Image (tube, rainbow, N blue to C red; front, side):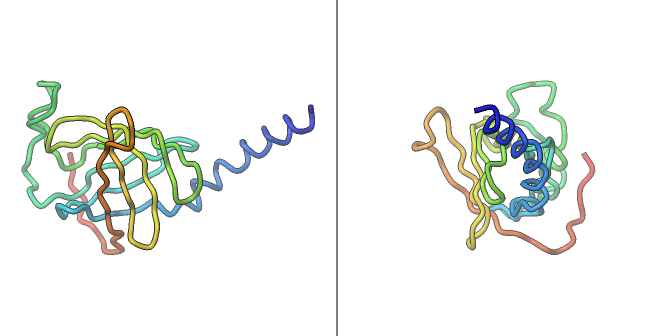
Length: 145
């Protein structure tokens, strides 16, 4: 019993950095509205997302429920956090902010041959919505918040 607990702890500690290093989700992704979002490590086993390019460079976060944030530029804001990496192509338990509605949703990310599938939902994931993002290898002129 002690050996299995020790071995499990060993695996958890030493495989976490490998999951992040070999992660297929990390990088720049083009969204359906032609914005570019970067997925990046923001913790030992977690991923975050940031809006790094938009077609409307002067758009403001005017639907944000926090009135103090409504005048900030959309470009450059973190829109996702807390995605727990479960394997190199899956992350769960994240939160994603939708600037079009001003709402934040629970979310998961999965990569496959078609791209990155971001599934946002409230409560039960069965009743959510999935967007497919496509990887871009092109250099992105990142906006400054």
